[in-house]
Length: 136
Length: 395
Image (tube, rainbow over all chains, first blue to last red; front, side):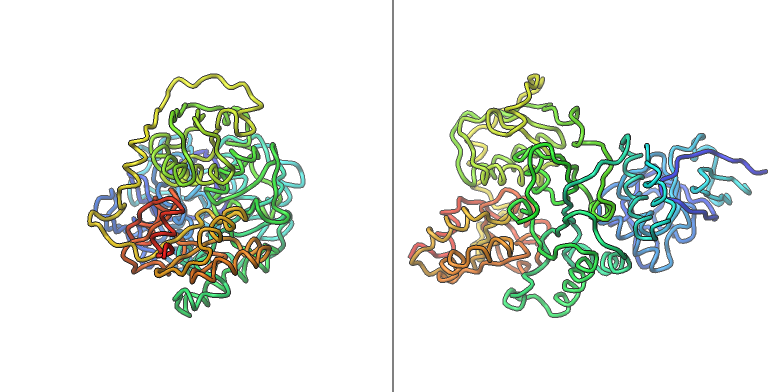
C-alpha cells in the first residue's frame, strides 16, 4: 500500500531508499564520519549506523555551521543519505543539502516517527512537495 | 515566501546551475525564518575562507561554482598572510590550498582582500539603514550596532549566495521588530580600551542571542565599540547591541525599557584580567597578538607610538587588513622597526601558525574567547600597553 504525505520543500530533488530514524538531532560535524557515513558519537541515538543511501529522518540539525561542508564531503565520498526528512529544518542542514544535491523536506503532514519505521522503503519527491511510503 | 517572476526563473535553473543553487539557499533560509521575500543588499562579506576551517570539501564546493557576484563582495580573514606566510611558519601544503581557495573566490569576482573589518575599505562603507549580507560575527555586530546598517549573521554559503544573486531573504535583523533591545546592561564605572573587550567577554555569556541596551558611565570610541561587539559575538551570539546616547538607533528610536537588567561590576572585569583561559598554571606568555578585530588606522598609530624607539623580545603580531596597511606604509614601518610583525589577511584566531605556543597575550575579548579552543593555546587579556610591555617593549 502506498501512502502519500504532503510536506515542505527545502532542497529540491527526488530519491528513494530505506528509512533510518533518529530521535536525536544531528551535528554532522562531530557526529558523523565523513569518510564512511557512520555515526561515531557513542551518545547518539543512531550510534554505529551508516547513513549511506538511507532516507535519514531526524528532528533537525545542530552544532557548527561547518556541518554544511561535512554533508558535501559525505556526498563526494558517496556515503551521503539518499534524502533527508526533518521535523523542522535549520540552516546548517538546509544549506548542506542544497550544495550537495540531497533532497530535503520538513513539516510533513503526518509525524514521520509514527508513520515510518526503520527499513521502510520511502520515496522523497521534494520537487513535487511530497513523501511516499512505498513498502512497509 | 513571495518571489518575482525573474526570481522564479532563477530558481528554475534558467540562469544556470550556480545561480539556481544560490537562489535555492536564499529561498530555503527565507522559508525557515518566515521571510516575506528577498531584498537587495549593498555588499556581501563571505566567511569560509581559512583552509583550517573549510578543508578540501569547502574548496571543492567553491571551485565548482560559476558566474560573477552582483554586488561588491569581500572575504573573511584567511589562514595566513598571503605574502609573508613563510615567515609565519606556515607549511607550503597549507599555503597552496589557501591560495587555491582565494583564487576560486576571485574567479567569481570577489575581492581577495581578507578582513573582518570591511567597513574600513574602499567600496564597503555602509550607512544607517543599508541592507547587507555579512558573515563575520564582529563585522556583523559593528555593521548592525555602530553603523546602524542591517544584516543577519550569514553563513559562508548563504553570504556567497546573496553575493551571486545580489539579494538576501528579508528576516531577522533586517526587520525593525527584531532590533528592539530585550535586556539592559548597566556599567557604573569608567572603562577604556581593552576594558570593553573584557566587558563584552562577560556580558556575551549572560546575554546569549538577545539584543542588549548598554548604559555606560563613559563614552566609548568606535574602536572600543568594535572590541565590545566582537567579544559579545564570540562569548555569546550577540549580533546587535545599542549603547544609550552613542549608537545611531539608540539616538533615533525611543525604545521601551527592557524588563531584565544585568549589572556588571569592576571586580568582574578584574577577574577576567587575572585569569589565563585554558590553563590553570601561571604560564609565561611567549606570543603577543593585537588586532582582533583588524586594527583601524587610529589603532595602528597608537601601537606605533607605544613601540617608538623600542625593541621587542617576544613574538608580537599586529593584525590588520592589507588595504589599511598599504594606506599607511610609514606607520607600518614604525611598528616593524621594533621587531614586531604587521600581518595582513589573517589573524591569531584563524591561522594555524599560533598552535604550539605556551600562552598568548591579547588585548581582545574575542581572541580571549576563541584562541584557547580554536588554537589550543591558553590566552590572557591585558590592555594594549600591558601587551606591548609583555612583548618586551619596555626596555
